Image 1 (spheres, rainbow, N blue to C red):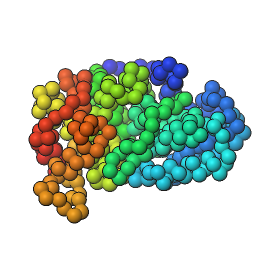
Image 2 (tube, rainbow, N blue to C red):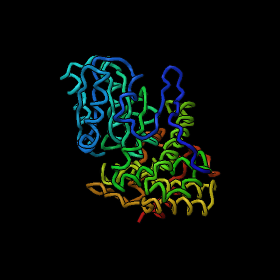
Image 3 (cartoon, rainbow, N blue to C red):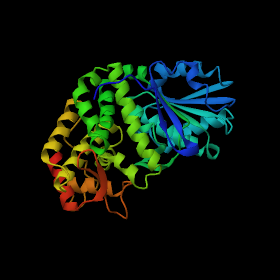
Length: 376
C-alpha cells in the first residue's frame, strides 16, 4: 500500500448520532473548524495541566468567535487521576460557571481527558454535547472515536462509564509534534492492533512505514490515523454498544488491563500494556490453533521495533499473601473483574487467520502457560 493524498474526513455512521472525524494539520487554532458545532452561550474546555500549557490558549481563542463565554478546567495529568474525584473537578467548573444543558464541552488532550470529558458530558444535566480534540496518537486513532467514556476503579479499568458519542472529532496532526517518544510508541500500539484483527494489508504497510511513523512524517501519520479511524468507524457503525463485533477492538486489552490495574494506574502507559497484552493474546491464539508461531514472532518483532514492551511484568503480590499465590493467579484474578468477563468466565480476543478476530474463553491452564511464557 502506498500513502495516498490525505482524506481529511471519516464519518462514523450512527444514524442521528453520526459525526465526522477531521484529520489534518492546523485544525485546532482555525475558527472554521468549529463553525458547524451546536450553538450555545458557553463552551467548556477540559484539558490537563500538561496539555493546557501547549494548546489551551489556542483552542480558547478559536472558540471565542462562536461562544459568548469560553471556560476551561485543567485536570491533573496521568492515568492514576482517572477517578471520580477528578471527574468532580469538571462538574465543579460547570456548576460554578452556571453552565446550562446547551453548553458544549471540548476534550483537549489524550485518552484520559477524552474519556472523562465524555463521561462528564453524558452525566451533566443528563447529557450535553461534547467534542473530542485528541492531542496524542493513541487518542486520535482509538480512544476519541466510538463514544466509550469512563473512569477507573481500583479493581478494574474503565469499569464505570457510559456509551456517549461526541458531535465531532478533530485530529490536528500538528499536536503530535509535541508528544514524548514514549507516548508516540504507546499510540503506535493501537495502530498496530488494527492489522491482526481487521486488515493485514494495513499491517504490512505499518511494518514497511514504521520508521517514517517514528520520525513523525506528516503524510505517513495522516494515512495511519485515517486508516485506523476508518477501521474503527466501520466496526462501531455496526456495533455501537459492543454487543458482539466491537469486542474485537479489545485485542490485547484483557491482558493489558490486568497489567495496568495490577501494577497501579500510570506505571505503564495504556498503549504499552496493550502491546504486551497483544503478545500474550497472540500466544494464546497460537495455542488455540488460530495462528502459527511465525505470526506471533512477526507481531512481537514489530511491537519491539516500535519501542514497546513485549515481556510482561510480574504483578505485585496481594497483602496479605494468599495461599498458592503466583503471578498467573494474579493476572487471572484481575481479568475476572474485566468488563469482558461473563459470570466470571474470562473472554479473550483471539486473532486468526491474521486479519480476522473473534472472542472466546480459554482454559485457565492454557492462559497460565501463556502468562508464564511471556512474563519475565
